[in-house]
Image (cartoon, rainbow, N blue to C red; front, side):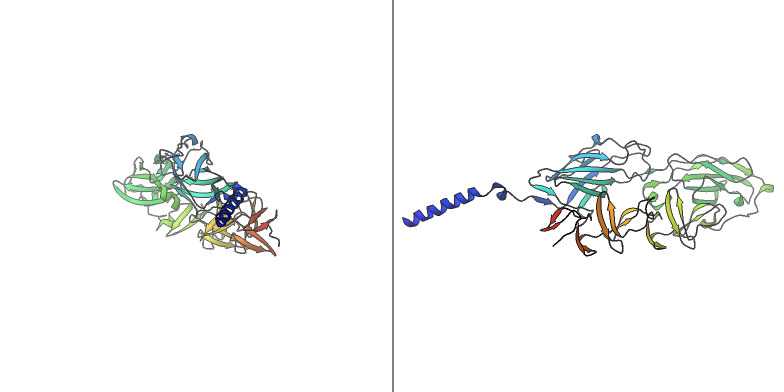
Length: 409
């Protein structure tokens, strides 16, 4: 009986103890959302059309235009175009959108501090960036797949009134600025000029026999990017011109290859590109801003790509030769290329501290963005993995960093 009384006493004491524990400590721990998947789709847009309104998108299923998550931990709460929805789309355009995600139950699920392309999957588009607001809201910016289409044909293909062989045409509204032009005598092709960056060409050096001549011209992709998304236009045919025997050319001025067609501007020779002036000289060992894009050429006049050193600065040029600015990812490492035209050197690789969107980042001597715990000038800082920004006024795994981001013992 004594033993039974003792057991009842113990059970009663345990009940009182359990009742005294705050409810919050018994609640389930909030789970971190470690990865995000967003399904996106945009119905076919023809060149010249504008983007559909955000309200036309389904946020719950793959239907028509859609952006949805198919996940019970978070959901789409808002959509905003970054690309203006009044802007007419062209071939290769990549419409950009920002989606707002909310945790469906903030007491149970929370977004973590930093995400990147490795843990945010955009099915049907391309991840650009992300940032968090509190623990229950995540903003993700992405681009839809580039707009595909067929270029419009050149217009008004005809011969100039003066002399023989001066072919001309007008550029279409939706074009690449590059053309294939073929010269015919009767039904025989006499001369081909491809990817010509001009709206006229002198065929007279090839009119070496009497006969009736005509030409065809079509719009074609020029850059490697345009090649992926743009298709050749239909041919536009010129009228005919008859060249009598006494007016035929002696062949002077003919070229022997693509790089010496007499065309000006961009010239392709094998797998390399150069830029030629009307006087026949080439851009060499220098910069040039062409169509508002910076390019760099070596001492032989070849357009450079990839990482390049110029003076004491480092730059990066994509496969089309365009100098990049802003954040750039290579071999799973992030670099920051100065985007400013008024401060520092535009496009130059930044090392050291970087101020971006009201946050601080740090790049080492090679320009690589730092992540995790790093010692800089004798102080320890924490940079969120994947996202790279410096942590301030917070606690990282039990270590407090102050308003300057410094952990002090």
